[in-house]
Every structure is written in structure tokens, then in C-alpha cells.
View 1 (cartoon, rainbow, N blue to C red):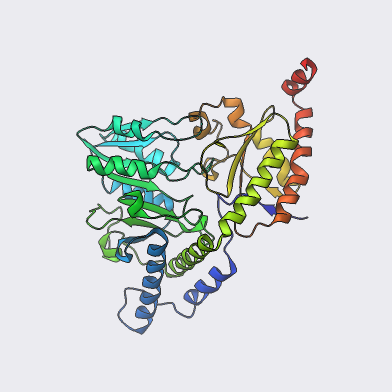
View 2: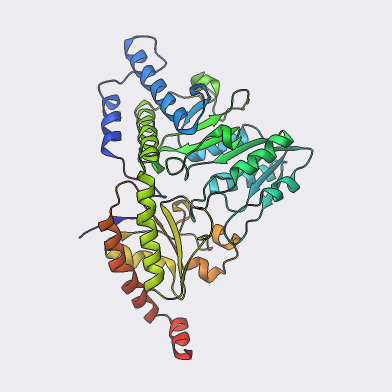
Length: 388
């Protein structure tokens, strides 16, 4: 059976060049990067080369990059490393659960949290951020690109608000890294988290940008790794892979690779909307990362459509992978004002570097007919059809 994968916001396949880069550090170059002998210094050099590559991707100094196990750890380190009881934190209602649940925990630990709303296009209003500021505001944490809709938040404007108020600003850039250009100085953020497995390196590695002078309380206690900001022996193969992914991402951004992915996404989106009635794009009027579209298919259950498409070889999702199986509709889509039924009828299609025009053809050969068949089983849809 032919299989096409359009769920790259959940995770991405490791690219051959990235696998080749990390392979020697699984066997031949096995040293502990903290050891002072040849084997350790060999791997230390590889870690520092990767650090330079990641720093180049986000526009910072290499010394400002802390390697982590992924986006969740990076978000947690940024939030718990700064906020403490009595502090006020500003965040949004559409954050990834790594931020949402961290902030919910802070509420139980004596912090005050302001949950900013979004408009129908999934956008936070920077003026709302300004109005939420208090004398005890310690941190603003607003994501750069939403993982379900792909909508890009006005992080430059939010960074300006944070700078004027002398408040720390963290942005979760997990779904933005490698898809759009990032410059931490232009954004004005103090912390920015990324994850390797969203940009074609393996699961289990990520990085947190920490602006020089920002003092974080560590989450882990042990050795003085990562300048005492993240204890634990470095995951050298993963870090090397992340460094190579950052290099490839930077090349792709400069050579137009993401524009081509955007054209494929647009063809998929426009053709579905033209061929399938009672559909629309969630957040479609806002700027989005080029690989993502979130489309609602009224009168059906999104999970039923995901399963039906998967049985035919097409992998898509109803939203965040970490929320798979959740009974409640997407918190992102309901925050945008969608009804529970429409939120549950929404699917996310997210493309990666290995997707081709033929993959989009395959998806389009399945989606309209599969939607039509599921709607035939929907009493609500049939009632609507009769009334027409």
C-alpha cells in the first residue's frame, strides 16, 4: 500500500544527511564530551560545532545555546527557571501543553497567571499583553507559531512590550524553527525553545536560547554541563543531528525550500476547499508557517476521518500529538471561537521536506471521496441535505 505522511508537526522523519552526520557518534566517536582525553575532546568539538550551527539558525551567540531533551524541557526550563511564588506570568490560551500545564502548576505554587485570549484568526493582541502587565510581572511566554493552525504570533511586537516593561520574554519556537527565519534580537526575546524532531532530526534533543545575563534556576542538579544550566551527560549523537538539521534548515530558508512547501500546502488547501463543501481553513486569514493548514469538515468527526484516511495510506491528525485520544475538543480551536462540533471536525495537514507534488496528488485523490462517504453516515448532514 502506498503511504503518504502529512503529520510533520507531530514529528518528522530523520533525513539521510542528518542520519549520516550522527552515525559516527553512535559507535566510532563514543566519548563523553566532558572527558579531557582524546575521545572526549573529539565529541566536545562536535558538540560545539553543533552549538554554532543552532546559534546561527536563531541569530545568537553560541554560548547562549543550552542543549535539552526537546521542546517540553526547554519550555519548562524557561518558565520554572525564572518564575517563583509571588511572581506574575503572562501567557496565552493557545500555547502548547508544555507551557499551558507548566503555568497551571505555577498557579498552584503561588504564582499569578494571566491567560490572554486570541481572536478568530488565532492571534494574540500585543495590546492585551501590555494591559496585562503588573508591577510583579516576571515573565511573558507566548509561542511563535501555533502547532495546530500554524499561525505566526506577533512576537516582535510582544518583545517590544516586554523590553519596555523590563520583563523577561520567552517564546516557544518549536513549530517555527526551520520554517521561517528567526532572529532573537529582532524578536527581542530572552529565551526561545526549539525541538529537533520537528526539523528532521531524532526525537529526544532540543535547545533553549538563553540571552546572556539571564540567570536560570536549573531543573536538574548534577554536573556543571551546559555552563551549569542543564546537568547531565550530553546526548552527543542527538546534538550532532540537531546541528546538522539547523544547517539544512538555514540552507533551505535561503534557497527557497520552504516556499516550495508553501506552494504544495496551498494547492492542497485550495483544492480541498474547492472540491468539498462545508469546509474552511482555521486561521487562514493570518500569516502562517508555510507547511501547515488546519481545515474543518463540517458534519463529520475528525478522528473518524483520520482513521478512514489512514486505512487508505494517508497520515494526518486532528491536532497536537500529545493530545491524541483526548475527549475534549482542541483548546486552540475553541479559544479561536469555534464550536465544539467544528473543532472536532477539524484536521491538521502538515508537510515536511520529503513531501512531493505526488504526495499532494495522492492526498487529493482520497480526501473528497472519504469525506463524502463519512457524511453519508451523518444524520446531521443528511438532514441538512434534505432541507436544501
